[in-house]
Amino acid sequence: MSRPGPGPGHRGFVPGEKPKDTKGTLLRLLGYMKPYKVSMILVAAMTVLTAIAGNLGPRIIGFATNEIQLGWQRIQAGTGGMDLDAIGIILLLLGGIYLLNSLFVYLQSRLLVNMTQKTMYQLRRRVDEKIKTLPIGYYDSHQLGDILSRVTNDVDTVSASLQQSVTQILSSVLSVITILVMMLVISPVLTLVALLTLPLTVLLSTGVIKRSQPLFVRQQSSLGHLNGHIEEMYSGHNVIKAFGREESVLAEFDQINEERYQSSYMANYISGIIHPLSNLISNLGYAIVTVVGGLMVISGSLLVGDIQSFAQYLRNFSQPITQLSNIMNTLQSTIAAAERIFGFLDETEEEPVPDEKLQYPAERKGSVCFEHVRFGYTPDRTLIKDFNLEVKAGEMVAIVGPTGAGKTTLVNLLLRFYDVNGGRILVDGVDIADMDRIKLREYFGMVLQDTWLFHGTIRDNIRYGRVDATDGEVQRAARTSYAHNFIRTLPGGYNMVLSEDASNISQGQRQLITIARALLSNPRILILDEATSSVDTRTEVLIQKAMKTLMEGRTSFVIAHRLSTIRDADKILVLNDGDIVEVGTHDQLLAKGGFYADLYNSQFAYNNASGE
Image (tube, one colour):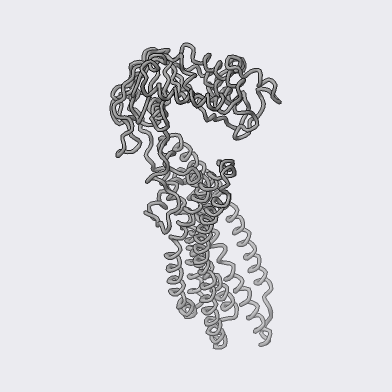
């Protein structure tokens, strides 16, 4: 039975989705930085010193200009000349402050990068741990590309934003305060004139941020949807070509890509308006201040150096405000990405068995018992209603039935990929609900029709069944599973590196390697999904011989596709609509002339008609 596709829990692109808790998300994100309190304090201290040192420069330059103006006035009046010593001291002081400022910036950056990357390391580790604790049902109901987008793109977005924004916020606030103080010291009147444009800038920034926030959320969500589509199309490109669906796939991609373009364009366009409008308002204020300041110089109430310093401060005053606005836009992407990450981290995990309830069989034999098992993937649809079965240790049980009958579901329940809704499953007399999932799965070995091999050497792929196995044990497992002969003919032999999809060896060779892997793990119970439908006759014979060797002395559950291969099964379960409709040996079921006999005869007739 196939597992359910994306259901209500799917979180792909949701148009207009808004953050549920912006403040809570931000606080939770900062909570990941708590272990680095000392670094945070030092970064904050360096930021304060940087803001102060950086904003003292214009005032000191103003002192130098004032000294030059006063010296010129003394020359004009014939009462003295330029005080070059005073000007030299001022310039040396200015150079020293700029050197200190550079040092503070360097220390700040070094500390911040270290702190941010450690924080992201912990967050990525938490995400990786979460992946391992989520039930199989989560992956069945969520698009793979969207999950990958959350654990890669969204984490990278948060990382980049933290590194850029954490100090910029504090630095911008401190710069505004420092510059405002300096402006008040120079001239309260000019400061009042300059601040007349501030409320307009704040209102503008607030309005833009409010409008762009949902768009940044759409931008992140649409990226996940786009990644999901690309991943599906890449993995299924052979099928797409075989059915000539390239045009429809491209049309769907264009639709998703257009949505991605629109959300990104609008988000960045609206947020980008802040900078030019802020500059326009700033320039208007700058022009007014310049005119008023010139009149004050003429009246003698201010010196030229004061106006020079004030003009620089006024020009600089808008920069941290604009920077804050830009940071707020960046934080919107960060919060949207962080919400998606935390949404993933908050998904319901597999519940561990309490320590006081844990039980394990006294001896591993391999007996299995289903007692009144009831199960459904969704509460409103029960697939298995009242399933009972007793399997003795060492028996071979074949599971047959039409597509959707419940064959794969039984395997899912045995391995606790899903838990039963009613009844219980016993392994060696112990309820598997009272066993730790990892310990339970040590009982089982699996050889499935869809082989899974990772990018690495053949030796490492076989050793995946038991990581502490020696090279000799790996080779013995390969010999027993009839894989050794073809492995030694490959370039590099056991050290040959398989590609990511293991496409550099044949389907049959992949299957023999998975059998060797299962054999090396030495399980008590085997789950076998016949995998000979897409291989040549000679390889099929090898696979059948390897499987027979693998099953010796072990309890085996064989999901049968070719009924002719299970004639020697100790017990054949015939499933239909989640229920056992017949149980018996091959001969008994044929003699009965029921559901199994119909399946067998129809398959036999088909094989004869097709020339097999």
